[in-house]
Image (cartoon, rainbow, N blue to C red; front, side):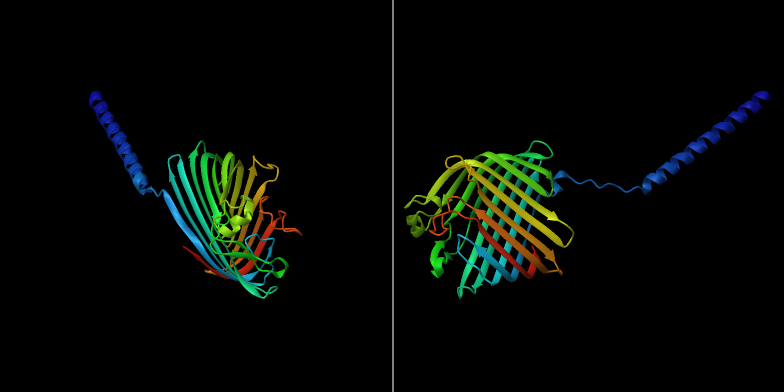
Length: 311
């Protein structure tokens, strides 16, 4: 009997043990069934390309000072800005492209005339990632305008610029430092730049640093550009770009400068307040001063209210 009693106790103990283990397994399965399932996404479906843009139509007021492409003090302006971008990422490779097109219609009160002010600016940059913040990069940039521009020295209308006259073309190899998503700092000690003047009249005058009768001049030097795109909140956006170029072959201490700034504040869904400020200094553009033979800081400021559409 003691043996039978022991066997019965042993069998009952095993049954309780397996019953508890089964309950624990069931509870574990129930908990796991409540967890969110991570959906597997094949690499082929991950979005590697991003593109889009903005279109802005603004009515406002602004001023020009020493603007080589043409212009003087003015009051009423109608401006359109088209900004397009296309970004591509795959592994360590990246390819960023931006195109900005600016066109303005100006009613000049001081001279009683009307004129246009425009610019297009294309940047293409290929990068190979060395680490999370630094890319080995190759940059190509072309900047020019579409229509004719005039200056008004002593209230005399003077032809000053046209399509690809001038045009600035840059090809550069360097390092692109990105401390965060809002800032990019590109620097290259090895940069080729061409200044192109295709208009025969401007070429014969030897404007924009080219020799009289020629259509272009090649330069070799150092180039740096800093771009900032800062969203202060959902309604306020600030975009800025600073370009610096030093010509090794001629007065490298006289650094050429190009700065563009755009501050946008959305008032409604498609209504925005815009403030655009551009600054240019080119030592080869000698159209200013009493004798119209000296370089000068060119400045343009436009402030206005208008329509903004996201593309």
